[in-house]
Image (cartoon, rainbow, N blue to C red; front, side):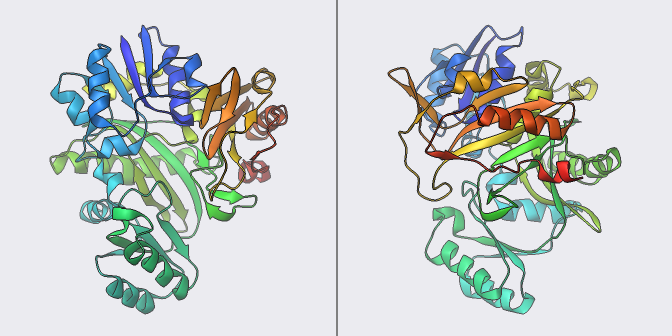
Amino acid sequence: MNILIVGGGGREHALAWAIAASPLCDKLICAPGNAGIAQEAECVAVAADDVDALVRLAQDKKIDFVVVGPEAPLVGGLVDRLGAVGIRAFGPSAEAARLEGSKGFMKDFCARHGIPSAAYARFAMPENAKAYIRDRGAPIVVKADGLAAGKGVTVAETIEEAEAAVEAAMQARAFGKAGAEIVIEECLRGEEVSIFALADGENHLLLASAQDHKAVGEGDTGPNTGGMGAYSPAPIATPALEARIEHEIIAPTVAGMAEDGVPYRGVLFAGIMVTDEGPKLLEFNVRFGDPETQVLVMRLKSDLLPALIAASEGGLGHFDLRWHDNAALVVVMAAKGYPGAYAKGSEIRGIEEAGGSEGAMIFHAGTKEENGRLIAAGGRVLGVAGSGPSVAEAQVSAYRAVDAIDWDQGFCRRDIGWRAVKN
């Protein structure tokens, strides 16, 4: 098969690494890709959100199957457009992708189908939102309704902070059209876990658990990011908890979408808060997580590609995946200044030595090659992964590889996996 992967980050490098190893894959193309993906696939300079150009590329390259990495092209209808020209793709339709594309849609869906989540209200007028905040008090959560590249959520500890978040989203338009409407939620307390499941419109298949680190600073301090590291499995995700999440959240979502006439096909990424009352859904993403995908593929024994095809075409009901018992952990190396302003263009050395460390793998996110040099070209630049019999040993492996990389304009958290190691 000729396979096209859409995207150019660490998630897409992880998917390319896994798919390139499949006996079903004859040719692998990635748009736009990065310097690391170029080692696994032919990279073509087409933007991941340019739906028209991606459809033309798939036709020109005689692509048999497309794997869509980021959320924007899914919400933009890429899977629908590919289907209209007879090309199969992994990912939900634009209508189903509203589970991530609109926080309000997701919350209304959960309320309608009895899926446990935080109490909420939706607003199109800032003054109404502020009145609700003053009535409810803090802490409280303010979310831009649309896609905001992971930056549209404020966990406000004071009423003033919450009102400022409303003004930023709805009046200053800090997130563009995404903040024209907002969702305000109760603030849930507990421990977060990421749960992934494939779905084919009727059936679902639970994948391994993971835990992400969103805050930029050690000890989970500072502003939120796209993710500074992750590990799998997450110790909090016991078999009993996973069974509850599957029964109370994943299965009702797949059934509810089918009941609503919008069958869900692709991957469901559920961000779960484990509260004293049980698991509650924080949000749905309609694509694989980044950096969670990196640790999932390192633990996956089975061929990933047939599972993605089954999710697209049906047949997950009799499907199974096998996982390594080992743990995996990834540390994100980012450009100094991220998630604020950061410089591009600095050189990164030592990647070969780092990747040669025992149990290590380097996933590229924001990189490019210039005249034989590896150059930083984004905020999150590398995902340095390690594996081992336990999370603690995977942590040692990953940081050994981090320390082999020579990049004076980069930084990372030094405590990825701290919850699992502490416990």
